[in-house]
Amino acid sequence: MLTDAELTNELGLPLVRGPYPTLDVARAAVDALRSGPAPIYDLAERMAAMPARAARSADRPAPAPRSGRPAPRAAEPLPVVIREFRSRDGESLRTLWAAMGCRSLGDDDMSLRRFAQRNPGLLLVAAQGAAIVGSAMGGWDGRRGWIYHVATAEGHRRSGLATKLVRQVEAGLLAAGCRKVNVIVRDGNEAAAAFWNTLGYGLHEARQYGRELPEGEEGEA
Ligand SMILES: CC(C)(COP(=O)(O)OP(=O)(O)OC[C@H]1O[C@@H](n2cnc3c(N)ncnc32)[C@H](O)[C@@H]1OP(=O)(O)O)[C@@H](O)C(=O)NCCC(=O)NCCS
Image (tube, rainbow, N blue to C red; front, top):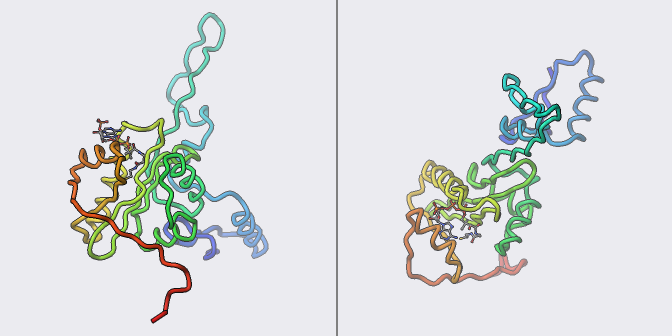
């Protein structure tokens, strides 16, 4: 049996392949895995990635052709799946956020990975096939929970997607011991204000101050 500790699944567990008849065959299999496309673990996503014909249930009869000609089949939309962030989601997430003007410091790949590692299960994306159509980031600092970058792509709004993302993040925060969650909404973003009101978030009159720390300041007295 061979254990490949370098190629792990999304939980960080090593992928186990084999048994293989010889070490050379095992090495070739590991090379192929490492250089090939990243495997998809989520069943719903796997089905979404399958061609429509293959995904159709085998016991469902095909539509009967009318007047001898095959009926044109309307393209079925791929299911939207809420899942945890993966390293390769960075670019799609930044595209989603850029489309709604919510980009900020910390959106680069390294920062997203660090955020996901510090907040297991709290950086969520809504994926439709290869596209990311929603996001929510939950952060727990030991005192308060914070939710950042809640976003739903234009064509998916008002279908409850952001609500599902937030409720899942809230459940994760609660499980981590968090009892109070904060959100920052920019002045003038009335849609976001209405959304958070609907989800039971109250407005706290306060000003938010912030400062970007220049690199190189750490350790200065
Ligand atoms: C705000 C946002 C995340 C809402 O996403 P969504 O997936 O459409 O939200 P939901 O479908 O879960 O909405 C739940 C409820 O919130 C309220 N709501 C959501 N969008 C609203 C809007 N534009 N105007 C008024 N109420 C709204 C409604 O009560 C809605 O329920 P309903 O559709 O049954 O009336 C989305 O509009 C968005 O991505 N905006 C741009 C990014 C942004 O501003 N993010 C917030 C950062 S703080």
